[in-house]
Length: 534
Image 1: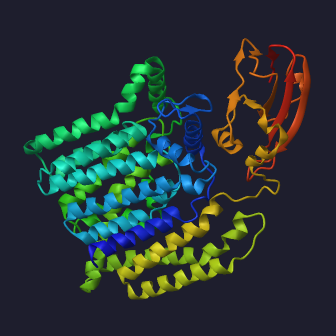
Image 2: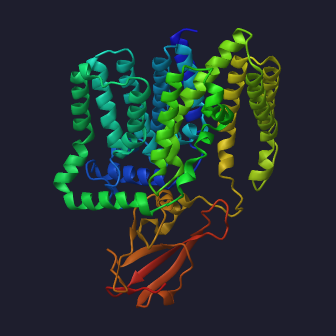
Image 3: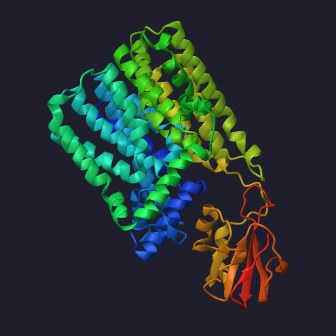
């Protein structure tokens, strides 16, 4: 198959897995923060000093927010399908980078092809490519930068254009989430590269490296430099708080990431096999294998050092892990064509297909366990059981091409039909919080003591914080306003004279728990301060 057709197939898989039904899944806290900031940026045209819920938001560089703010000029942030398209594009960029990284390292286009298909059908990359957050931007842009670097170094080229592009993408990565990708992806790559691929520095290419560095600094530090000049104290305070968070918030044990191999989802068994040195040493060039393996190992170790650990931080492992799996699939494909598959190879293929076959047969029944109104979808049965038939014939023939086709088809089917099942609605009283926008009191100023960004995004407007000083809540801007509260309040909780304290509505916003309500109170005050007891 020609290169253009391979890239077309990869692009098609990405469109299906990253783009179809991308409005499914409610925004998590990180996506909500980004979209709230984008909404306010588009409304105020304050592009250099982002705010979230009316307060300065300098904790993350603004490139992803700029993209969504530009979209918000045409589509409201409620239009998740539109606002998640850039994330899907970033996901495609990562897949494309993996294609060329694997191709450059191996010298074989097919290794790049298989590696990119693995990445495009990996569970966690699919998930992150469907959310408008910072992570998919910074890691994808860094992967592209590394693809340009490898293209130069592997072929001993001094292509200044490639160095220029690497510098631009590094700068854009920094503008997406600061130094995160430099620590997690670039540093492990450089260590592993100079340990196993090229054991001397590319001094002859110093001009290109200088250009790359200068371009990176100009692109990446433009906004931070502006903030350092205009908001120095606030920026340094936020940087210090973010640094502290790495050791004090969401603290998990060192071994938290040992299950990193499972993030490729449907390829997990192949991931485990590719990590087994005794199994792989005769199936791949040892130099290339050690490079990819140690890139991955160093990456996981560096991620494990900080106390703060979250599953989404593991997104970068998809890059080297997909390449390792791509190498393994290439070997199996060549062995199968030469009728030279070993017994262990056959066992690996058969066990993998058998597991996928079981998933295909059982998946249509999941509605019985994930919804409050179980039903049978004929279309779901037809699609998944047809996939099961394809997998059955792949099991019998042991043809790697057939296995790949039906594996990717299964993952695409799970993506299209299974996303809603990740957030089942079991609360019969559930109501979308956005319905509050239709209420008569919606035009009033909203206040709350501690509201989740997901709820603020759904409400669709700024929900200011009720500020407390020495037990007194500072007077809101107007004498008539709305308090949003997670718990039921009564007039006695505000020890002041009010002319009106009225419960206007309560909304069951939680899809699973009918006891979780958000209450809205219309308050009219007569004196400057409110005394509040909780």
